[in-house]
Image (cartoon, rainbow over all chains, first blue to last red; front, side, top):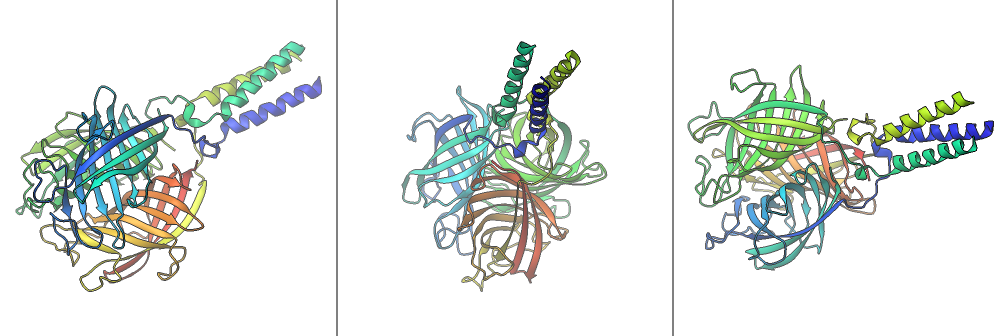
Length: 186
Length: 186
Length: 186
């Protein structure tokens, strides 16, 4: 009997110990609490498409200008965008929100970019916003960036978004598929 | 007696099980661990106010320039700022720190912006910094952006900041009220 | 005997209670789950070093230009970079990845900057990326910025990175030492 109770005590101590241990020592399960797939569409202003353009070059290196993406793989070009978000890969589908932010081309040798932006939702499905930041080595089939926060339906969320270039036309149009895996949901 | 001990064992197992479950399955309480209200003041350089200006246009689309905010709702303008933070809504109150970073105007049809910046504190009340990012649809009465991190007194913090335009004068001065609700405090 | 069992029950209740309490009420231990020290090297394009330059001015205030850092402590200059990351402080050591992103100079009175960038790894030691954002008052010996997310080996990480200027040569070259302390590891 006494041995049994001693064993119980020991178990209790272990339990108390483990539940008091700090959060970050606990192995977290890499299973998303929310998944979401969306597309957004970027039409860069090139001097001739003012009506349709959803983005524009706003910064450029000394060897660049604001209507043509610069040489050296566009190194140094800064582009501000306000792109429609759609549920499928059709540019003309009703947008569920806007992708707003900027990207920079940041390598001379190959195309690669860095971006920071928000998905701003305003639809029956979703209200609120999701904020992103990260490197986008766009010649890779898929690239992972961070979901760094959210508001509204996405209050305090964190996760990883996998980008893939779903289509592009020359240097004027591209469409990104965004597979979001959110691992923190409140 | 034996039944009692069995029950204890069962409870123990449940306890051990629940404390080992991953953090993100646990329902989190949406109650801030810290609240903070501050103001910051932005005076945009317009070619005539070099002495007082706290911000300047540093990027612009091809149809814009660096001393006047561009047409089309300033779409594409990039503004760098170093603005005083005050405890109340008075520009001339002693600053408790500086709001430093940038914002971009990112929509042709209406005024809306995207910003990333830090509150850098240096006062008896607060040391350290808070980092922010998110979309700011500035025609809305209130807008939520993410608190994505912090240092010093705000080590590792996360939360949501609600922005509201407290006042503005033409296109030269505006004052933002920032209601911070921090949900992660270390 | 009965008293012993009552005590056990009480302990159990306390244990169950504490493990059900929401994460953010728990005092977290400020002990990193991962530490990392790396260096990166920035060579700013100045009109004469196109071959070696790893960064370029892409935005500037109205009083600045793209080949010389602007007056007033470079206030308003926006610099895009793609800098080699090394394990030691030698520019010519084999890079383990690239630091990619941008920084802005954001104060007229002294040198201070704000930066957002990623460490993009591609080596036997590390795969994946770490994303950073924060204020960098670069005249201070050390400055803390936020690690706001990560991918690959640094999946979902958060933490604080302490920057220090390890060396600089005029206004063309500087080397930053980055001491990363990660407090969230998955």
